[in-house]
Amino acid sequence: MTKQTTVVVIFLAALTFAGFVIVSNLVSPPNPKPVLPKSATALPSPTSTPPVASVPPAQGKSTPSDGVWRAELGEAQNLLERLHKEVTDNDWQNAQTHFAEFERKTQQLPAPQLNHPDISPVLQDFLALYRVQLSRALNERDSAKGRFAVNQLYGIVSEQRARFGTRGLPLEYQRIRFLLREVEMWNETGDDEMLRVRKAALQDAWKDMRPVVLARRNGGEQVKNLDGLLEKLARASQASEITQLLPEFDKELDLVNNLFQRQARSGGTLNGSAKTTEDDE
Image (tube, rainbow, N blue to C red; front, side):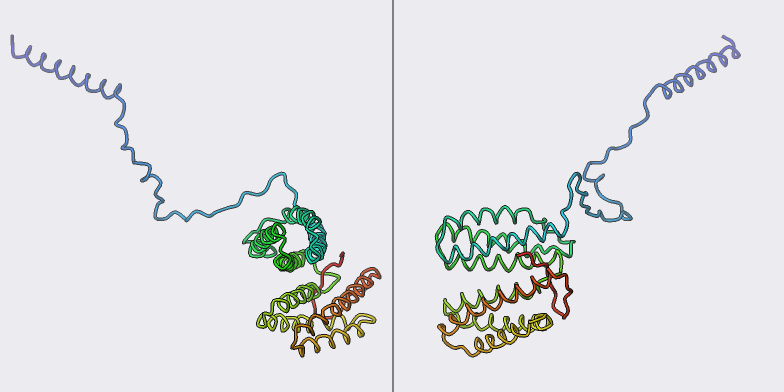
C-alpha cells in the first residue's frame, strides 16, 4: 500500500467516526435537569412576598338587612321576658317551649367576624355560654340559675340588637332593666359586693338616660319618680327594703316605655345625648 493510499484510508476512518458522533447527539435525549425534592421547591425565594389569607365571598346567599336583624332580636327579647316570668313561676313546660323558640331565633344571628366592627365575637361566645347555662337550669328546674342565665342573655341580645340601628327607645332603657334584675338577684343571694357594684352601674345608666326622658312631653313626672326611687335604693340597707322598691321601678319603667311608644307613633324626633334604638316590644 502506498503512502497516498494510507492517508486516504485514515481520512475516511476519521470522517466515519465523526459522523457516528453527530448522529448519536441528534438521536440521544438531552441530559435531564436534576429534580429537587418537594420540600426544596416549596421554599419561597428571598424576594417573594408572604402569603395573604383571603376569605372567599359568599355565593348564592343574601344578607338580611339591619331592620330584619332588629326584628329578630326584638322577638328574642320578648321570648326572654316570657322566660323570666315562667322560670320565676316555676312554669317549666312553657319555659322549655319558649327556650326552644329562643334558640331557633338566635341560631340565625350573623356569624362572628373579627374584621367586622359591628359584630362582636365575644358577645357571641357569651350568648352560647348562657344558652347552655339556661338549658341546664331548665332541665334541673333551678329557678335561681335560670333567672340569672335569662338576664345575662337579655343583656347580650339587647346589646347585639343595638348594633343594627339606633332610633326610638333609649339604649340605656334596656341596660337599666338588666341592672334592676341583677340588683334583685344579688339582693336575694345576699352578695353585698355585687349588689353595690350593680347599684352604682344603675345610677350611671340613669344619668345617661335621664336627659332624654326629661325632654319628652310629660317626661318630667317619670324623671322625678325615678330620681326618688334611685335615692331610696341608694339609702336602702336591708334586703326587704330593696325588695319593696323593685316593683315600683318596674311600674315607672313601663310608663317610660309607653312614653317613647307614643312618641314613635306620633312621628316625633328625639332630643338629648343618649343613644336610642327602635322600640317594637
